[in-house]
Amino acid sequence: MSNQPPKTAFAMNERIVYPLQGVGHIQAIEERPFRDKTILYYIIYLEVSDMTVMIPVDKAEEIGIRAIVSRKQAENALDIVGQENEAAPTDWKMRYQMNQELLKKGDVSDTALVVRTLYHRSKLKELPIMERKLYDSAKKLLVDEISLSLGLEKPEVEKIIHTKLEAESNRPVKETPPIDEADDFEDETFDEEVEETPVVEERSLDDIVEEEEELDDSDDEDE
Image (tube, rainbow, N blue to C red):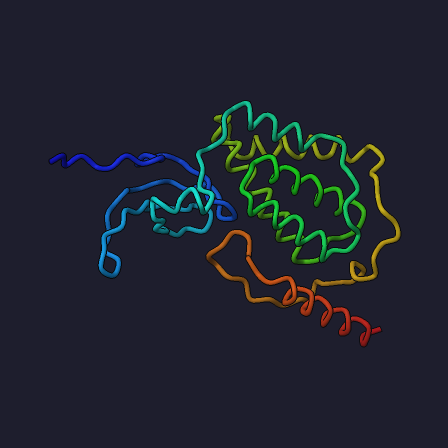
């Protein structure tokens, strides 16, 4: 009988990507008791949230955990950032849902697309607070993975991304008029309790819409 550990898709000390959570470091692969059986887990440290998670090895693929992309894929993601921007829905609720679904897929190209879309949208009009958070999270995910893939420092990757976004912003941006009234509000007084665990909060769209509409009502009263 062999005492060798079972083969796994990822090895100890390997860097991986956990969708919506960011780049992680596999610190150990261990068996832990769960109810009446023993389960093999990846013990993963997520630097961006400073937490350690346990993921069952046989569920990792289903969750979407994957390896860091190749140099070619990273360069392709940077190309996407600098491509001509396409029209996005004017309704922030629709944009938010669409972009969050892209991030959940965990593909670096989709993350680059979210960064590009929200950056150029912000040039047209200030983003609602939830979209600003989504943009910041997407950019963080993109910078972290590309820096590892290309072997560059994070500030250097941030500069590359910013340069590509700014170059594209000088071109005319396609837009679908008119601006939806639901996107026309000030939200700086929006007070929200932010969960510390996820990089990108997974909240129901109904909750978000209700909070933003309440803020709209409060702004109307002030006027």
